[in-house]
Amino acid sequence: MAYIALYRKWRPGTFGDLVGQEHISRTLSNAINTGRIGHAYLFSGPRGTGKTSTAKILAKALNCEHGPTPEPCGQCPACKKINDGSSMDVFEIDAASNRGIDEIRDLRETVKFAPVDGRYKVYIIDEVHMLTTEAFNALLKTLEEPPAHVVFILATTEAHKVPPTIQSRCQRYDFKRITVEEIRGRLEKVVSEMGLQAEDEALSMIAIQADGGLRDALSLLDQCSALADGELTAARVRQTLGLIGHDWIYKLTEAIYAHKSQTALAVLADLLRDGKDLKQVLTELSLHLRSLMIYQATGTLAQMDLYAEPDEVLQEQGKFFSGEEIMAMIKRLHEALTELKWSPQPRITVEVALMSLCNPAVSGAVPQAGNTAAADDGRLAQLEAKLSQMAAQLAARPAVATGGAAKASAPASPRPVAASRPAAAPTPAMPPEPAVPITACDAEVWDNLLKTLKERNKMPVFACMNQGQFAGMSDTQFFVKFKGVLMADLAMRNYRSVLEGLLQELTGRPLRLHCSGEDMPIMPPPQPAKKKMAPPPPPEEPTIHVDLDSMPPEERAPLEKAFEIFGDHVVEIEDDK
Image 1 (tube, rainbow, N blue to C red):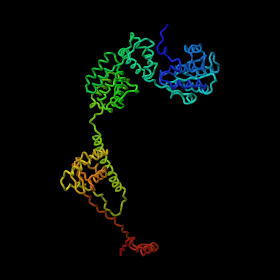
Image 2 (cartoon, one colour; image 1 turned 60 degrees about the horizontal axis):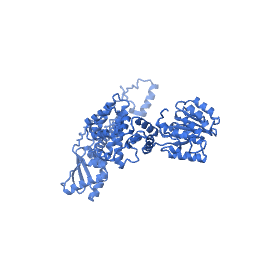
Image 3 (cartoon, rainbow, N blue to C red; image 1 turned 45 degrees about the vertical axis):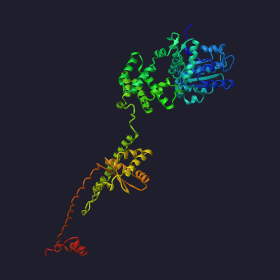
Image 4 (spheres, one colour; image 1 turned 90 degrees about the vertical axis):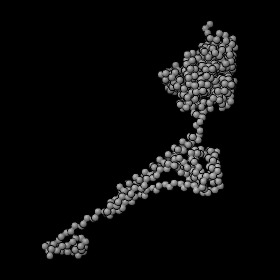
């Protein structure tokens, strides 16, 4: 007899055999018992979680000679035909191969015929999301109002690709990923029936590698048991599946913690010499770091379905890095995994990633513990001061441009007017120096001021004042010196009210803050005003000479009348006589 693969041999035959899907098996069983059988179902979920197996169980439950029953016998002719795929009433359609409109039209023609042997005709359409839009439209009406003897079961791993019009006409059941404990329990039962001895660690490794799919777990077990020689060990599983192993991963982690690039590269070389895959190296290292991160946060790995590791190792290596460092390392490993797909030299990509983890100060892959928030706030304060200075310079430019434009557009006047010139900005006066020496009591006020800023989480103000030097105080004033004028300007412009409020709170009297900078620039002297130019003299009015005696009487009369009215304002009359 031909050998049957484990995933086919141990395929669930009843609702009770389903692993990890009790919510679905219980709901379908109650529906069958009460006779509330739907005409269309949509089974969605990850691969290997029992969607197609549940569809076949439902088909047997509806057509069993002892049914409809939630517990089909599996021995009657109807159940046997469904199990071996020879039933004339149960149709399994692969939508990936039959995705066109012609196949769906053929299906619509066969739907109207009555069942041959059983009570219902069951259509199981696997990977239904692969159907074309036209095929979905052709199926829509039939799916909405099928004959009473037809049940549609649609299975898919990508339910979001199924049109909403199809989903709204189906009862949807979401299959969940099967946990590591549930898969390991099923594997223990299988190896017991096979008469195979298996280590617990070996079964746990298979369950983890199955990634939530029981079918994948049975396929891996089938592969590993072929070389088991009567006993399935963790070493044999690791060798068969190409896994790296905890010991190698721990060595890599220790080398990264000790900043030993040579050791990390030597471990990688040994793994490649044994035929290990580069992608698997990065994957298992990231899984180990993930276990460390979760263990630091919760103190346990229970119910996490993580990389199976002993607690003593997690306690020891969990002290190597902080949570922020582990997250940065995992991010760097994921970047390397992405680069592997396109890299012409994958080994170089992995070596660069490991060296960046071993030398975080050079690569910047892992944040350093010495970088405190106060230093960051100090740099932020310096940037704010520079921005304030640039804003002040930009604000002064429009005023100068406006003055020049006003001069250019001013209308000409018959009389010269002295051009007005804005007065030069006066040189800022230095803050007054304290008149009293610094005492121990005054220094205590300064220390308390910095301490209060830090306790009240006013880190930008603290970072700014922490760069200043206390210069003394009087009854009404408080003096601080800075090395640069930018920080002094920032303190006076943005933080003055906050600081004066805290000083009054600490000393019990109002104090006025004065901040000075040692490199305060000296403003250039104002430019001398340009000399006023005298306006040009007005042009002389022309003189008209008229000889009245030589003019005819008819022409001389109107001129004499004009002279009587306007006089010399119009013309100047010269008489040659």
